[in-house]
Image: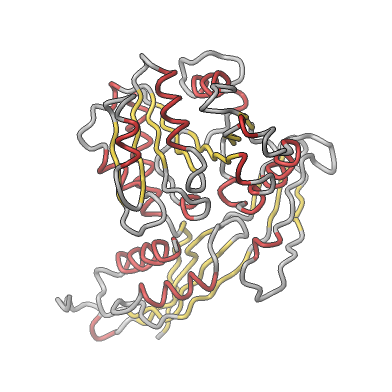
Length: 228
Length: 141
């Protein structure tokens, strides 16, 4: 005889449970974790390199997801000893279990920030919680003004949007206002920061935003940060 | 492509629930998907078919209910359903996602929360429990 069995749970429950456990560990260790997502080539590694250098001497670690190679990890080892590369093979996103394994032997309380550089992809990472404090979605000026509205799910869950490579705004005649409108169509309230890792423009605002994520951080703009 | 990871997770969840009753067969799985779930229905169906092979859910029917976008004002509580421009049966529903309103149409407060639209839920499963085997432990796998 057929029988109906009720579940009423997220399809991603297994990952969500692991992520929740990681989030507890991160909070207990006092480390702020940021999940950084973008298309391939938008400039995640370059931004992190500049960010870690600017945050120094505050200790920050990076976990990087790529399909293959540890090129990004090698680049970042020049700015921090806390680097772990996850090579996913053909998997298009990181999952909480991968992050857990990557940092298994780290003493998390020694870190103040941990950046998770997700696999370059604006679709798949949206569904997988990694235990982060904040989700940051980065777009580059080179991707065009309308890119944000092409990827609604990832944007809808974003706590911050970064517009990177701002040194190319003028050469590319990029219409910043059109970009803001595209973001607002999906996420009317998310803060948007424009910056360039190359020239350093806007980096200060990005660092200020990161500091608001710490409970002990400077007050002021913390009301703009939504819990994820 | 992440649909395969989601389908595998779904099959694991189902298998886990019926671990103590290895003769159970799943005939249908009921899901709820919102336009912001970030999942393409046809890809999920194909992935589920593959992920379920050789498991208790092999051949199970996927019944998918689509929700729409709904926002609620943080201040006055006004709820507003946003028209889903996708035709029934249309696959990539995000291609024509309507813009979320910036302010409440009732009180103009700029604080709208999404109350419906990002569902990615396993609602229920329809199962056949083999009665004669229901209290017999087997060690088939």
